[in-house]
Image (cartoon, rainbow, N blue to C red; front, side, top):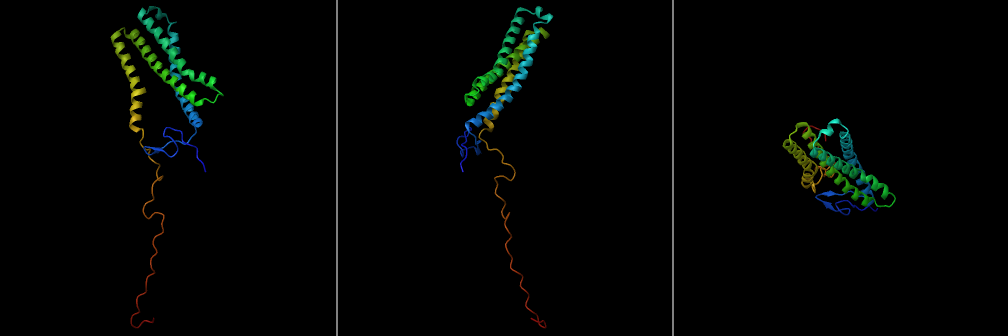
Amino acid sequence: MTTTPDTDRNGPAGRRTGGRTGRRESPEERADRRWVDLLQEVRVAQTGSQVLFGFLLSVAFMPRFAELGDFDQGLYVATVVLGALATGSLAAPVAYHRIFAGHRLKPQLVIAAARLVATGLVLLALTISSALLLLLRVATGDSAFSGWIAGAVMLWFLCAWLLLPVLHLRRHDGQPSSPPAGAGTDPPAGAGTAPPARDPPTSAPPTSGEQP
C-alpha cells in the first residue's frame, strides 16, 4: 500500500519536527488548502478597506471640506490614495486567479497572492492611521495630540498584526500537540487481560466420624 508523500513544512512523510507529523498531501492539495485559507483572510480585510475607502470618498463632498487648511487637504489626498492602494492590493488575488486559471500554477498563485495580501494589510494600517490623524485634527484642532494618538494606533497595529503573531509562532513552533484522550497511550497494566486462573479450593481432610 502506498501513501501520498508529505509535502508540508515538516518534510517527507515520516519525518517529525518536535514530535509532530506534517499533513500527508500533494503539492496541489496543499496549494488548494492554502488558497482557501487565503480567501478567508482576504474577505475579512477587504470588508474593512472597502467601508473605509467608501467613507473617504464621501468626505470631499461635505461642505466643511472646503474649510480645511492646505495640510489637512493634503493629508486627505494621501489618505485616499493609501486607501485605493490597499483596496487594489487586497483585490489583486482575484485578478491573479483569473489570469492563472487553467495554467496549473496554483502554488505560484498562492505565493504571489499572499505577498499582495500582506502588502494590502500594511497599506490598510497606514490608511486607518492617516484617516484617524485627519479626523482628530479636525475634531480637536490639536496637532500634537492628534499625532500622538495616531502614532499609538499605528504602534498597536504593528504589535497586533506582526509582533504578537511572530512571538506566538516562536513560542509554539515545534512543540507537539496534545494527543486526544486515549489516543497514542499504552493501556494501564493489566488492562484488557484476563485475571490469572486460580486453583480450585481443596477440600479439608475428613474428620473422625465423617465418611470419605
